Length: 144
Image 1 (tube, rainbow, N blue to C red):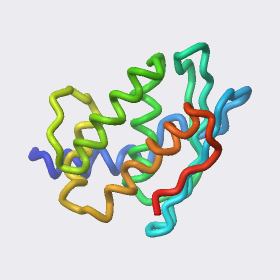
Image 2 (cartoon, rainbow, N blue to C red):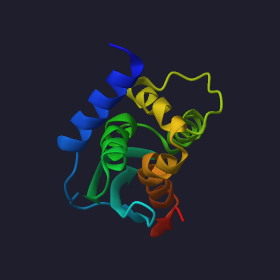
Image 3 (tube, helix red, strand yellow):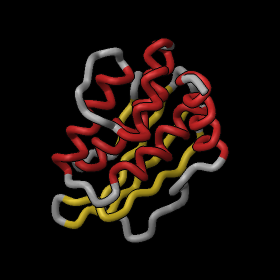
Image 4 (cartoon, rainbow, N blue to C red):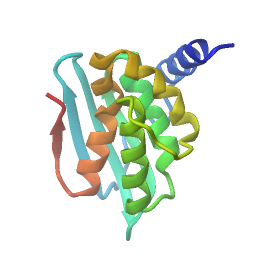
């Protein structure tokens, strides 16, 4: 199986069966994101204990890439500190925009294929921008 096939398979799996797509009770931080180009809308809810994310969930509707990215994001950041998440986001953003990253991003590496479709970069990063807004105490982000 080549990378493009793997990319499609993982994206489809996470978009049809998104992980952690539900309301989070007793969240400490929340931010909403909207991508008007694609119509994607997402809400990220997190529970922060000190500098660490102890739980994360998302709700909303979006294209396959947006939903899959949010799903994988929720799996990738649980138990991580704000500083670790900022570094993961920076490396993820570099990956999808075609800039080199030396970090192993695990499942997130599958989004490397997005760089071939520049209009889809916003779909892949929407949930990440919402997450960063939530961590920083902001309420809303838009990727216009």
